[in-house]
Amino acid sequence: MLYGDRDELTGEVIAAAIKVHTCFGPGLLESVYEACLAHELQSRGLDVLTQHYVDLSYGDLVIPRALRIDMLVQRRLIIEVKSVDQLEGIHTAQLFTYLRLSKLVHGLLLNFNVTQMKEGIRRVTNFRELDERPVT
Image (cartoon, rainbow, N blue to C red; front, side, top):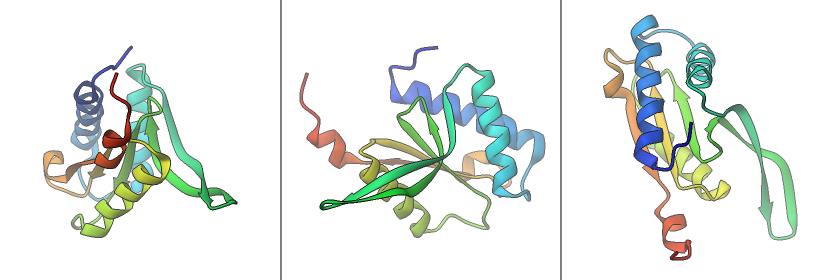
């Protein structure tokens, strides 16, 4: 399945997260939600990498496997899975840093430890990468 539009891809991921949350509700470990969400997304025909490592460069130094992203969907949407009492600013900052360092634009922060999944969803955009892309 081809997802050319960010909203179409994020919409599919959010629908899958809602399905997983509806099945289990809050209170499980992040690893359980991550595994089930990855399975659900793959069953929908999406390319999903879990616990995906990214190298980091600092000048001429390359640090292999410096970042570990919870999920990378279609090789362009970062998903960070949480199961916390409430999302904090540091969670958003972490996802933004992952976006910036991996030079990707869009990410979703999904907190499954909520009564309704829609309460645990945050979209994060790396506008810097949008600004630096050539106009086509």
